Length: 337
Image (cartoon, rainbow, N blue to C red; front, side, top):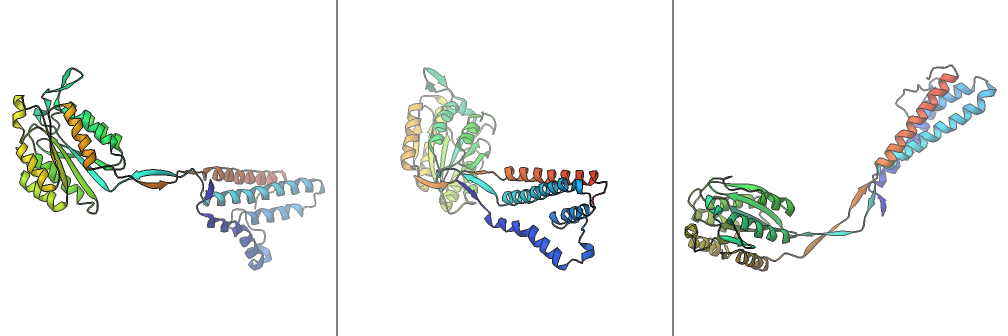
Protein backbone atom coordinates (compact mmCIF):
# COMPACT_ATOMS: atom_id res chain seq x y z
CA UNK A 1 0.00 0.00 0.00
CA UNK A 2 1.32 3.43 -0.99
CA UNK A 3 0.85 6.37 1.38
CA UNK A 4 2.26 9.73 2.46
CA UNK A 5 3.29 9.83 6.10
CA UNK A 6 3.29 13.64 6.31
CA UNK A 7 0.44 14.65 3.93
CA UNK A 8 0.08 18.09 5.52
CA UNK A 9 3.28 19.08 3.70
CA UNK A 10 1.21 19.45 0.50
CA UNK A 11 0.09 22.83 1.83
CA UNK A 12 3.46 24.07 0.56
CA UNK A 13 2.20 23.64 -3.00
CA UNK A 14 0.45 27.01 -2.59
CA UNK A 15 3.65 28.82 -1.63
CA UNK A 16 4.69 29.98 -5.17
CA UNK A 17 1.22 31.41 -5.91
CA UNK A 18 1.13 33.09 -2.50
CA UNK A 19 4.48 34.77 -3.12
CA UNK A 20 3.36 35.80 -6.62
CA UNK A 21 0.21 37.39 -5.21
CA UNK A 22 2.09 39.24 -2.45
CA UNK A 23 4.65 40.57 -4.90
CA UNK A 24 1.99 41.85 -7.33
CA UNK A 25 -0.03 43.42 -4.54
CA UNK A 26 2.66 45.12 -2.45
CA UNK A 27 5.78 45.54 -4.59
CA UNK A 28 6.18 48.90 -6.48
CA UNK A 29 6.02 48.71 -10.26
CA UNK A 30 9.68 49.69 -10.48
CA UNK A 31 10.57 46.53 -8.64
CA UNK A 32 8.52 44.16 -10.76
CA UNK A 33 11.62 42.99 -12.61
CA UNK A 34 12.95 41.12 -9.64
CA UNK A 35 16.58 39.98 -9.93
CA UNK A 36 16.98 36.31 -10.71
CA UNK A 37 19.15 35.79 -7.66
CA UNK A 38 16.39 37.01 -5.34
CA UNK A 39 15.30 34.62 -2.61
CA UNK A 40 11.61 35.06 -3.60
CA UNK A 41 9.60 32.44 -5.46
CA UNK A 42 11.48 31.03 -8.40
CA UNK A 43 8.69 31.83 -10.88
CA UNK A 44 8.66 35.61 -10.31
CA UNK A 45 12.10 36.63 -11.62
CA UNK A 46 11.79 34.38 -14.64
CA UNK A 47 8.39 35.85 -15.52
CA UNK A 48 9.81 39.35 -15.27
CA UNK A 49 12.70 38.37 -17.52
CA UNK A 50 10.36 36.93 -20.14
CA UNK A 51 8.32 40.16 -20.10
CA UNK A 52 11.49 42.15 -20.76
CA UNK A 53 12.52 39.87 -23.60
CA UNK A 54 9.11 39.93 -25.27
CA UNK A 55 9.05 43.74 -25.27
CA UNK A 56 12.08 43.79 -27.58
CA UNK A 57 9.77 43.47 -30.57
CA UNK A 58 11.61 40.61 -32.23
CA UNK A 59 8.60 38.96 -33.86
CA UNK A 60 10.66 36.17 -35.38
CA UNK A 61 11.73 34.97 -31.98
CA UNK A 62 8.47 35.49 -30.12
CA UNK A 63 7.13 31.98 -30.70
CA UNK A 64 10.42 30.39 -29.63
CA UNK A 65 10.59 32.55 -26.53
CA UNK A 66 7.01 31.72 -25.62
CA UNK A 67 7.74 27.98 -26.00
CA UNK A 68 10.83 28.23 -23.83
CA UNK A 69 8.93 30.22 -21.27
CA UNK A 70 6.25 27.55 -21.13
CA UNK A 71 8.86 24.80 -20.74
CA UNK A 72 10.70 26.63 -17.97
CA UNK A 73 7.62 27.49 -15.96
CA UNK A 74 6.22 23.97 -16.39
CA UNK A 75 9.48 22.49 -15.14
CA UNK A 76 9.52 24.89 -12.21
CA UNK A 77 5.97 24.08 -11.17
CA UNK A 78 6.35 20.34 -11.63
CA UNK A 79 9.76 20.35 -9.90
CA UNK A 80 8.34 22.25 -6.95
CA UNK A 81 5.45 19.79 -6.73
CA UNK A 82 7.85 16.85 -6.68
CA UNK A 83 9.95 18.44 -3.93
CA UNK A 84 6.82 18.93 -1.84
CA UNK A 85 5.82 15.31 -2.52
CA UNK A 86 9.25 14.18 -1.31
CA UNK A 87 8.84 16.30 1.85
CA UNK A 88 5.52 14.52 2.50
CA UNK A 89 7.57 11.30 2.84
CA UNK A 90 6.01 8.81 0.43
CA UNK A 91 6.39 5.21 1.61
CA UNK A 92 5.37 1.76 0.52
CA UNK A 93 3.87 -0.28 3.37
CA UNK A 94 4.07 -4.07 2.96
CA UNK A 95 1.66 -6.56 4.46
CA UNK A 96 1.34 -6.56 8.24
CA UNK A 97 3.76 -8.90 9.96
CA UNK A 98 4.24 -9.93 13.57
CA UNK A 99 7.31 -9.99 15.79
CA UNK A 100 7.41 -12.21 18.91
CA UNK A 101 8.00 -10.18 22.06
CA UNK A 102 8.40 -10.97 25.73
CA UNK A 103 9.22 -9.10 28.91
CA UNK A 104 11.46 -11.92 30.13
CA UNK A 105 15.22 -11.40 30.29
CA UNK A 106 17.41 -14.51 30.46
CA UNK A 107 21.07 -14.12 31.33
CA UNK A 108 23.32 -17.13 30.69
CA UNK A 109 26.50 -17.26 32.82
CA UNK A 110 29.21 -19.69 31.65
CA UNK A 111 32.22 -20.76 33.71
CA UNK A 112 35.57 -20.32 31.92
CA UNK A 113 37.80 -21.57 34.74
CA UNK A 114 40.63 -23.97 33.95
CA UNK A 115 38.70 -27.07 35.00
CA UNK A 116 36.26 -26.54 32.10
CA UNK A 117 39.00 -27.95 29.85
CA UNK A 118 38.42 -31.42 31.35
CA UNK A 119 37.40 -33.81 28.54
CA UNK A 120 34.79 -35.97 30.27
CA UNK A 121 31.90 -35.52 27.82
CA UNK A 122 31.34 -37.68 24.76
CA UNK A 123 29.94 -36.58 21.41
CA UNK A 124 29.61 -39.12 18.59
CA UNK A 125 32.20 -41.40 20.17
CA UNK A 126 34.78 -38.65 20.77
CA UNK A 127 35.69 -36.97 24.03
CA UNK A 128 35.09 -33.23 24.20
CA UNK A 129 35.72 -30.65 26.90
CA UNK A 130 33.12 -29.43 29.35
CA UNK A 131 33.22 -26.01 27.72
CA UNK A 132 32.62 -27.49 24.24
CA UNK A 133 29.63 -29.46 25.55
CA UNK A 134 28.28 -26.34 27.27
CA UNK A 135 28.57 -24.31 24.07
CA UNK A 136 26.77 -26.94 22.02
CA UNK A 137 23.76 -27.40 24.30
CA UNK A 138 23.46 -23.78 25.46
CA UNK A 139 23.45 -22.61 21.84
CA UNK A 140 20.43 -24.81 21.10
CA UNK A 141 18.67 -23.42 24.16
CA UNK A 142 19.33 -19.81 23.17
CA UNK A 143 18.18 -20.42 19.61
CA UNK A 144 14.76 -21.58 20.82
CA UNK A 145 14.13 -18.57 23.09
CA UNK A 146 12.23 -16.61 20.44
CA UNK A 147 10.95 -13.31 21.84
CA UNK A 148 13.05 -13.35 25.03
CA UNK A 149 15.99 -11.05 25.52
CA UNK A 150 19.17 -13.07 26.03
CA UNK A 151 22.44 -11.92 27.58
CA UNK A 152 25.78 -13.66 28.15
CA UNK A 153 28.18 -13.45 31.10
CA UNK A 154 31.55 -15.19 31.17
CA UNK A 155 33.34 -15.66 34.47
CA UNK A 156 36.46 -17.15 36.06
CA UNK A 157 38.69 -14.89 38.22
CA UNK A 158 36.34 -12.08 37.22
CA UNK A 159 32.90 -11.84 35.62
CA UNK A 160 32.27 -9.68 32.58
CA UNK A 161 29.35 -8.99 30.29
CA UNK A 162 30.07 -10.58 26.92
CA UNK A 163 26.65 -9.79 25.40
CA UNK A 164 24.06 -7.36 26.81
CA UNK A 165 20.41 -8.36 26.87
CA UNK A 166 19.19 -8.53 23.28
CA UNK A 167 16.75 -10.34 21.00
CA UNK A 168 19.55 -10.92 18.51
CA UNK A 169 20.05 -14.57 19.42
CA UNK A 170 22.50 -15.26 16.61
CA UNK A 171 24.95 -12.69 17.94
CA UNK A 172 24.75 -14.14 21.46
CA UNK A 173 25.40 -17.64 20.10
CA UNK A 174 28.36 -16.40 18.08
CA UNK A 175 29.88 -14.68 21.12
CA UNK A 176 29.36 -17.82 23.20
CA UNK A 177 31.11 -19.99 20.61
CA UNK A 178 34.02 -17.53 20.49
CA UNK A 179 34.63 -17.82 24.24
CA UNK A 180 37.93 -19.50 25.14
CA UNK A 181 39.44 -20.79 28.36
CA UNK A 182 41.84 -18.40 30.03
CA UNK A 183 40.00 -15.26 28.93
CA UNK A 184 38.97 -14.49 32.51
CA UNK A 185 41.50 -16.44 34.59
CA UNK A 186 41.62 -19.87 36.20
CA UNK A 187 39.47 -19.67 39.35
CA UNK A 188 35.69 -19.41 39.83
CA UNK A 189 34.09 -16.07 40.78
CA UNK A 190 30.54 -17.41 40.94
CA UNK A 191 29.38 -14.64 43.25
CA UNK A 192 30.65 -12.02 40.81
CA UNK A 193 28.58 -13.52 37.98
CA UNK A 194 25.41 -13.33 40.08
CA UNK A 195 26.25 -9.81 41.27
CA UNK A 196 26.88 -8.56 37.74
CA UNK A 197 23.49 -9.93 36.64
CA UNK A 198 21.77 -8.16 39.53
CA UNK A 199 23.47 -4.92 38.54
CA UNK A 200 22.19 -5.21 34.97
CA UNK A 201 18.60 -6.13 35.81
CA UNK A 202 18.24 -3.15 38.12
CA UNK A 203 18.22 -1.05 34.95
CA UNK A 204 14.92 -2.79 33.99
CA UNK A 205 13.07 -3.33 37.29
CA UNK A 206 9.59 -3.95 35.83
CA UNK A 207 10.48 -7.05 33.83
CA UNK A 208 10.99 -10.75 34.57
CA UNK A 209 14.62 -11.80 35.00
CA UNK A 210 16.17 -15.27 34.97
CA UNK A 211 19.79 -16.34 35.39
CA UNK A 212 21.11 -19.71 34.19
CA UNK A 213 24.54 -20.48 35.72
CA UNK A 214 26.72 -23.25 34.30
CA UNK A 215 29.78 -24.17 36.36
CA UNK A 216 31.92 -27.17 37.28
CA UNK A 217 33.60 -25.80 40.40
CA UNK A 218 33.21 -24.04 43.70
CA UNK A 219 33.31 -20.30 44.32
CA UNK A 220 36.90 -19.50 45.30
CA UNK A 221 37.28 -15.80 44.60
CA UNK A 222 35.30 -12.55 44.43
CA UNK A 223 31.99 -11.68 46.09
CA UNK A 224 30.77 -14.37 48.47
CA UNK A 225 27.97 -16.56 47.19
CA UNK A 226 25.84 -15.82 50.27
CA UNK A 227 26.03 -12.07 49.64
CA UNK A 228 25.38 -12.44 45.92
CA UNK A 229 22.36 -14.67 46.62
CA UNK A 230 20.95 -12.04 48.97
CA UNK A 231 21.32 -9.40 46.23
CA UNK A 232 19.53 -11.71 43.76
CA UNK A 233 16.69 -12.35 46.21
CA UNK A 234 16.19 -8.63 46.82
CA UNK A 235 16.20 -7.88 43.09
CA UNK A 236 13.69 -10.67 42.26
CA UNK A 237 16.22 -12.61 40.18
CA UNK A 238 15.39 -16.30 39.71
CA UNK A 239 18.56 -18.41 39.42
CA UNK A 240 18.83 -21.85 37.82
CA UNK A 241 22.15 -23.57 38.52
CA UNK A 242 23.68 -26.39 36.47
CA UNK A 243 26.58 -28.42 37.83
CA UNK A 244 28.76 -29.75 35.01
CA UNK A 245 31.08 -32.76 35.01
CA UNK A 246 31.19 -36.49 35.63
CA UNK A 247 31.52 -37.52 39.27
CA UNK A 248 33.88 -40.32 38.21
CA UNK A 249 36.58 -37.82 37.21
CA UNK A 250 38.88 -36.36 39.83
CA UNK A 251 38.34 -32.76 38.70
CA UNK A 252 34.60 -33.27 39.03
CA UNK A 253 34.95 -33.58 42.80
CA UNK A 254 35.53 -29.80 43.02
CA UNK A 255 31.87 -29.15 42.20
CA UNK A 256 30.09 -27.56 45.16
CA UNK A 257 26.60 -28.96 44.68
CA UNK A 258 25.40 -27.88 48.10
CA UNK A 259 26.08 -24.22 47.35
CA UNK A 260 24.47 -24.43 43.91
CA UNK A 261 21.37 -26.04 45.40
CA UNK A 262 21.15 -23.33 48.06
CA UNK A 263 21.37 -20.54 45.46
CA UNK A 264 18.57 -22.07 43.38
CA UNK A 265 16.28 -22.77 46.33
CA UNK A 266 16.56 -19.30 47.86
CA UNK A 267 15.86 -17.51 44.56
CA UNK A 268 12.98 -19.71 43.39
CA UNK A 269 14.96 -21.61 40.75
CA UNK A 270 16.21 -25.21 40.55
CA UNK A 271 19.50 -27.05 40.59
CA UNK A 272 20.44 -29.59 37.89
CA UNK A 273 23.38 -31.95 37.50
CA UNK A 274 24.74 -32.60 34.01
CA UNK A 275 27.10 -35.59 33.67
CA UNK A 276 26.65 -36.04 29.91
CA UNK A 277 25.45 -34.16 26.85
CA UNK A 278 22.16 -36.08 26.95
CA UNK A 279 21.57 -35.02 30.53
CA UNK A 280 22.49 -31.45 29.69
CA UNK A 281 20.02 -31.39 26.80
CA UNK A 282 17.32 -32.82 29.07
CA UNK A 283 18.05 -30.04 31.57
CA UNK A 284 17.51 -27.37 28.97
CA UNK A 285 14.29 -29.03 27.86
CA UNK A 286 13.16 -28.88 31.48
CA UNK A 287 14.12 -25.20 31.60
CA UNK A 288 11.93 -24.60 28.56
CA UNK A 289 9.03 -26.10 30.52
CA UNK A 290 9.80 -24.13 33.68
CA UNK A 291 10.26 -20.88 31.74
CA UNK A 292 8.06 -21.38 28.65
CA UNK A 293 8.35 -19.01 25.73
CA UNK A 294 5.57 -16.44 26.02
CA UNK A 295 3.43 -16.52 22.87
CA UNK A 296 3.03 -12.79 22.45
CA UNK A 297 3.44 -10.85 19.25
CA UNK A 298 3.56 -7.25 18.16
CA UNK A 299 2.25 -5.93 14.84
CA UNK A 300 4.96 -4.84 12.45
CA UNK A 301 4.50 -2.82 9.27
CA UNK A 302 7.53 -3.10 6.95
CA UNK A 303 8.00 0.36 5.43
CA UNK A 304 10.15 1.31 2.43
CA UNK A 305 10.95 4.97 1.82
CA UNK A 306 10.31 6.32 -1.67
CA UNK A 307 11.07 10.01 -1.07
CA UNK A 308 14.35 9.88 -3.00
CA UNK A 309 12.54 9.31 -6.32
CA UNK A 310 10.48 12.56 -6.35
CA UNK A 311 13.40 14.38 -4.73
CA UNK A 312 15.84 13.38 -7.47
CA UNK A 313 13.37 14.05 -10.30
CA UNK A 314 12.36 17.41 -8.82
CA UNK A 315 15.99 18.52 -8.59
CA UNK A 316 16.59 17.49 -12.20
CA UNK A 317 13.57 19.48 -13.40
CA UNK A 318 14.68 22.61 -11.52
CA UNK A 319 18.19 22.26 -12.90
CA UNK A 320 16.82 21.84 -16.44
CA UNK A 321 14.65 24.95 -16.03
CA UNK A 322 17.68 26.95 -14.92
CA UNK A 323 19.72 25.76 -17.93
CA UNK A 324 16.95 26.61 -20.42
CA UNK A 325 16.49 30.06 -18.87
CA UNK A 326 20.22 30.73 -19.09
CA UNK A 327 20.35 29.69 -22.75
CA UNK A 328 17.56 32.15 -23.55
CA UNK A 329 19.49 34.99 -21.94
CA UNK A 330 22.59 34.12 -23.97
CA UNK A 331 20.73 34.00 -27.31
CA UNK A 332 19.08 37.36 -26.74
CA UNK A 333 22.40 38.97 -25.89
CA UNK A 334 21.16 39.99 -22.45
CA UNK A 335 22.61 39.08 -19.11
CA UNK A 336 20.16 37.39 -16.76
CA UNK A 337 18.72 39.91 -14.34
